[in-house]
Length: 604
Image (cartoon, rainbow, N blue to C red; front, top):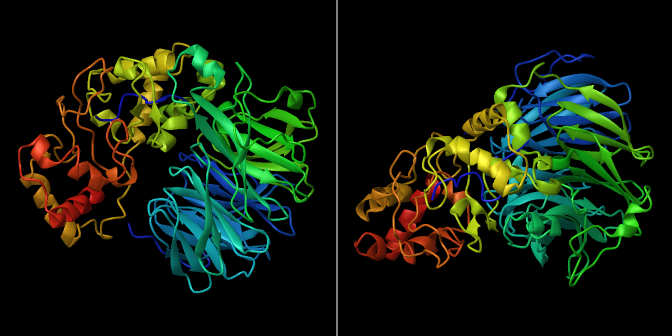
């Protein structure tokens, strides 16, 4: 099973110990950023109260910038941790928190006038993403995506005070204005967990009926949590199904925060002109306007909130309510280019500030006129690299039929999102299979779950034309996507010690892995192989028999398991369909051997 060829939904289109930085280190202010070989790739941003300032996170440059959005200048840039992802600014504007996704840390910044200073960096747990600052000014909450938990931290002391369990793979979170309730979006779990911040206990959870839960915005009265997500119907990737919204659809969803209740949603797509990869969200200070970023279709959606037609049970349908299109003030699509991600309203409630990843810029957008009034460059190369062009293609929903989805819709950040999809990549329709990760895909031939594809470049082409049902890519576009895929590699594993060593249990599990015959198919160092093996888990409709062993690096963060997601945990994998007596003829694992084997798998 190996990264399955491009895409279980699309593959295509534009997927250590924390470092401690010295106090007071910053880069001098400059009105015009200097060209660099490194793309900044702004991913999120947050306002500094009281002044026309915004702090922007530069995801691939590992920096944060202080920007004067009225004058259009970059004032100061400082190094933070590896792959900064989320940011929150305290209510008094004196401090900001930055999560460093690939460093398992948080950096505390101090904006002061025209400068930005690093105060400290400290560990918080595996894969920190969203962050929210409590009104008390001393407490914050950080989503730990790889731990299925939220870390509560004491900012002044730089410590984690407790860890709160939530659903699978939390990405973003937000607090009610009074700080009493925390809404956590569990992207892989497809739920929102609402936590009582005083007790740290879950008040309730609500099913979302969708994937890729992204940024969360709370209404000023604390009644609702709003967020974008995608919806799937599990239908085959024919043009008819795609345009019906039966493959991937885009939603604006809200859930109540005071008591359990159904999720409510509206669909955002128009037939043959859909919205792709909704991500960022912002509410105006008065709560009357809402804005979303649609990264895949390079646009902002601006909406008048009070009269949006939210539907709970049985809804919301597959296409945008036509009544919304009759009034541009009620619903407007604003083309901004690039890949808009993080977004926030300026204090006037009319101006939007946008972190545009591919444009390497902060954009200032006027919602009244539907126009970009200013783009503030953050630096970067004059000419995009081949891999950067490939990333743009990989995340570009306009390359699919009707603009409905990009490769990144299912291969999130080049990996996967746990979805089951029905493409032609396994040679048949009606046989849903899990989206495989593409981390390390260029090194793990052959491809697809059944291992019948041996030419990755041809598979890239077929992903454009078949999985995406889009136009035929040019040869240079295929090379660009291939170059991007070479950059997508497994991340550092948080289940190992800081020096990369195995735990005692994992070491014992490594011995079990060899003794039970797992190595016959999953061979180090990639923990896969080139063979196709009959393991008795096929489907009647499969066009090909047997499966290609999937690479196991990073398997700890990829539930559910097996080609159809039938195993929810690694324990289920090694004690049921993949138990030794069934596959290798060895005795099944004892409880202790099972625990050790799982510890080893989680360390890969």
